[in-house]
Image (cartoon, rainbow, N blue to C red; front, side, top):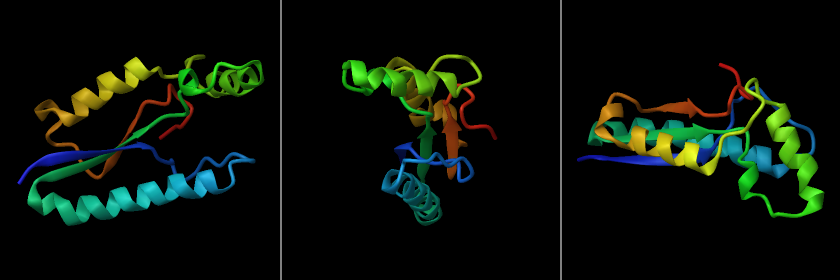
Length: 117
């Protein structure tokens, strides 16, 4: 009769980046699943949300060849920085709490402006 399912990653449905290949397809699939599960599970009291990021650079391997990709994530944002794991944790704790009890069937955009609404 209650609960929250959080998806991480997702897709804004508009922004596409060359070179993502099947990763982009997978993120689009996550959004389709989120929408359908929200419809199916909402009547049972279960909320379903996606935490949409533009990428979390600190999760990348610490290697020199990864630096351009990390920088590209920050450069794609309006804030000039990417979300951190701490940011993700804080937002996840909020949306999973009763304070966000009216939120379901949507994305929570924590992309620092990389994905606009």
